[in-house]
Image 1: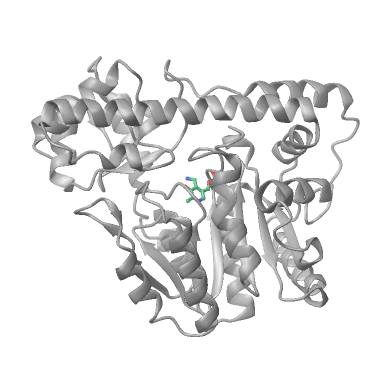
Image 2 (image 1 turned 90 degrees about the horizontal axis):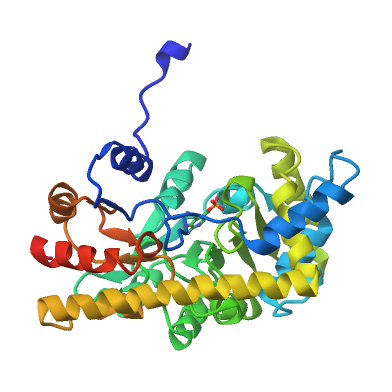
Length: 394
Ligand code: PMP
């Protein structure tokens, strides 16, 4: 039986990480995998997480199962963090999931259960795992125009034209903030126009929010998600705690299902619980408990928000430094978009050949689609990257 298996394509980002490790050059720069790194290249455990874990170690008296949906206090805290009352609590069903990926996977499975005919519209480009999970679950994917490789901003007219092709019941997947991989985002006027299309055509909104706090601030980054959630009849929200709490390996995420009316919430909750039961029974608890402790303790919450804000500001500083450096070296403003983009990534919009050239010539490791992780930089490496970009003729 196992002999029947075919080889699976290697994950491009993970393969790049392996190549980086093997590269003996001192000046090499890793801009690949989407993990925050400080100026020393370290992915730290956040202060509030350490403190919550210390308390947990002292206070926790049992490791028994919690509940299929996870701890209800986690759901309450996360619904508050992401939605802040934008939707009546009794319209929201929720399950804890292993990371944001688990939430995305469960969301697609819920779509499949509720409407096997539904197609899912995804931005071109999107996080590659969206497309591969959709394929694996057996849902038709339709790409809508999103990134304009000339302006490196959103091709909003193209996006609206493509969304107009969706049929009632199709799902529109949107990145709540800090679009991965491009870094280009809609403004709130554009979000409102998307909401109008969703409502006019009877589409289902699905939001993936994996970087709340990495763009313009915790509240600002949730504004679009709150706008959509408060304006549509039904919606799905997959949220990840991996980045903004730095708990990547603890696998902490949540899926929320918003129903048209509170009468439906119970059945949606049953279906979400069912999906958890089928796939892994009880979701992981450690990261969720730490997140709940932080969000519900005013001191821990303030310290966490302050550290997250420092991270956000440092990434914005690197963006500005890189844009300035490129302006200086290239004598043009064509790289100004790097300072406009938000989140951990920017897609510089060049060919795989030039990405490879930068890797070979200068030891710059970015993903083949020209996505770079801004957090992989520091003040000293920004000029090296800028020179490599200009030398390669991007
Ligand atoms: N959605 C998007 C858009 C992402 O970029 C990520 C992280 N790469 C995730 C979801 C899920 O992350 P995780 O499963 O690590 O929480």
